[in-house]
Structure formats: C-alpha cells, structure tokens
Image (tube, rainbow, N blue to C red):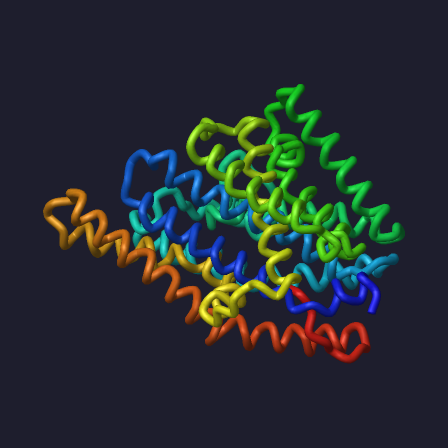
Length: 357
C-alpha cells in the first residue's frame, strides 16, 4: 500500500485523542475563568493553546482527506459548510434567545442584528461573534476558501501554496497596522497553525512520519515538551508573532509525537478519549451554555466566593460543560452527521464512505 493510501485509510486514533483533549482544555479554560473579572494568564493560555491544536489538526485532516491530486472545490466547500455551520448556527440562535431572556448568563454576548448576521456568515467583526468561540470558525472558513481555490494543484503544490500565501499574509500583518476587521483576521499569526497542519499532512502522506527513526522521534517528543513548557512558563500572553510561533510549533510537535506513537503501535487505546474526540465539536460549541448556567446559579447560592467555592464551581462548570457537549453529540450531532452523509451521497451521486471530519 502506498503512503498516500495509508494516509487516507488510517483511523488516526491520535488525532481523535488530540481533539478530545483540546476540547477539554477549552472547557477547563472557560469553566475556571468565566466568573472572574480578569482571567489569569495561565488559564487563557490553556484555552488558546487548545485552539491552536485544533488548527493544526484541521490542516492535517484537510490535506489527508482531499488526496494527492486535484479535487472538486464546490463539493469540498459544501461538505465543510455542512460539517461546521448547522451546529454553530443552532448554538448562535440559542445564545440570542438566552441573551434576550437573561443577558447575565453570558458575559459578553449580545443580540444586535448586524452582529448576529456577521456571525452566521462567518464574517469578521470588530467585536467577537455572538458565540465567542466562533472567532476560530471564521479562521477555519477562511482556510477552507483558500484551500478550495488551490483545488487544481497537486497535494504537494497546495501545501507549498498555502504555506506561501499564509506566510505572506502573516508577514503583511506584522509590518502593517490597518484598522479593519477583515485585514486583522486574514493577516493574523493565528493562520500559522493551519500551515503546520498542512505540512504535517503532506509529510505523513509521503511516509515521512512512518520513516522517522528513533533519533527523530525522540527529538520531536522532546521538542513538544520543551516548547510547550516555554510557551506556558515564559512567553507573554499577548497577540505577538513570538507567541504564535511558540504556540503553533509546540502544537505541531505534539501532533507529530502522538501520530508517531500510533504509527509505531505504541499509543494506548483509550475509549474515553476516542469518544471525546468524536464529540469534540459539540463540546466546543455548546459547553458555554452549561458553564454560564452553572456559574449563574452558583453565584446566587454561594455567599462567599473564596478559593474553595471557586474550585467547586469550576469543577461543576467543567463537568457540566463536557457532559452537555457529549449529550449534544449523542442526541443531535451524530444523527445530523448521518443525515449530512446521506445528503452528500445524493448530491454528489456517490457511495458514502467514512471520512475524517
């Protein structure tokens, strides 16, 4: 079997684990930080690092799932839209209703019509989307658009093109200061995670990861620990190029290290992490409903918001957030994915096969 076929047919248990872990990191960040006026830097870093893992994983998945040659851009975009938009739209509309009922549940959410419209269309705004986490989906959609525009190239050529385009945009953003949300978004160093992801995907497609020797494996594993430690311990948490380089490089090394463990058949089988990986999108999108509700109730009940009370509230919020996302996945998303798969099969007249999502 060729390395390309291997890349397309592998289960990628490591990727599932990473998605589950990243989703839990985001829930942890919001569960702890939601009631605080000023979020601790470490808490913010946990959430931001998790999102960068998602970006790297996304780049890897898109390269892997589109194969070695050209692909149909409309089919690709429709599939990505169907995968991302329905749940996000549902959550956004739910937030609008919640805000109209009790705006205190979400600290910064609002229901202005123009802001709701921009959120549903994945368009950047001067403020964050109605569902605050939608900022990351705006980047995802931009990545999909750029990638689809390169549909006529081979996988290797697309990897070079995406790397060149995003590096150029990041460079432009670092040397210019234009007060426009589109410019701010689309020249952001946050694009770096996707670059590392597509590079890893292409390297894996060519068998570079399976051919990595012990020295390379040890080096990548060590780098993942050292760079991640440097990010959390020493890099100031501000929107700087250095922050993003450290964060994206650390995320990429973690992805490579875990994938290499899987390729070497040394990655343990943890059913819980696999399920959390499956449910990661629902957890990511819907956990804030539970987090906001838990803290709204807890603040009314707790007279003393000391350390002990905050630990208890955070525990309940994190547990509730993860459980809510898991329930949404089991009750709604899983059925929705089946319907979308059938719709794709009818639209594109093909036999539905399991794919990375």
